[in-house]
Image (cartoon, rainbow, N blue to C red):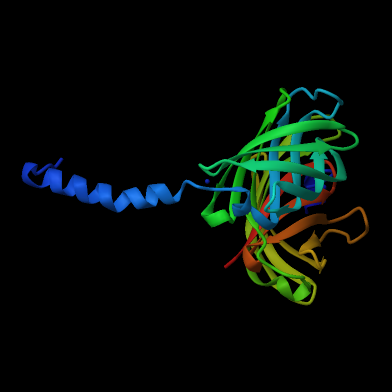
Length: 282
C-alpha cells in the first residue's frame, strides 16, 4: 500500500558523377521547407493550451520557496501578444493556485519572448524564452530571469470547446514522476507507469507500476474524476487495500490537450509530492 511505504504520498559512398545533380536536387527540395519555418507572427500563437513547468528553485529572489518545483494549468493566447493563465504551483511541499497574465512577442524565426507577473507570494515579473512548433500547436519554454531558477516547460493546444466527463473516455497510458518530501526533510524520488481506463461518466480504474527510490511494486488503482467546462479535471484515486478517508489516496489535477487524446497531470495531494505526469490515449 502506498501510504504505508511513503508517508505523505506517495525518454560513403559517393559517386562523383551523381554528386552535383543530387546536391542541386536536394537544395531545391529543401529550400522551400526551410523558408516555410520562417515568417511567424504573434497570430501564429493563438488558442487555449494546457501546460506544465518543472525544475528547481535554487535561490528564490523574493521568497523562501526553494527546492523542487512543478506547475500545471491552462492559458489562453489571444494572437495579439497577450496571455491569461490559470495554474497551480508546487514549491517543495507548498501547493497553491496562481492566476496571472502576461505578454509575448513571436519573432519571424518562431522563437519568442514572454514576460508574466507572478502574484502572491512571488510578486515579481519573470521572463521566459521559447520556441513555437508543430504548426502552432506546441511551445517549449525556458525560464531566463531572474537568476536562481532552473525551470522549463511545454504547452500543447487543447483543441476542444467546452468539456464534460464524457471527454475523458477510453484507455490511457498513465505516468507520473517526481519526488516526495519525507518527515525527516529528505526527498524520495518516484516514477510510475501504467494504464488507466476512464468510463466517460466520472469513474476510473487501472494499474500502476511504481518505483520508490529503487523499490518497485505493482498497484491496482481506482477512483473518480470530475471535468470542468474549461477542460481541467480533478481525479482522485486509491490503491487497493488502502483507506478512502480524506487523508488517503492521491488527488491529481489534469488538463486536457490534443483534442482530448491526452492530458497533463499534476499531484495536488498529498502536497508533499512534487510530481507531474500525463495521460495519452492508447
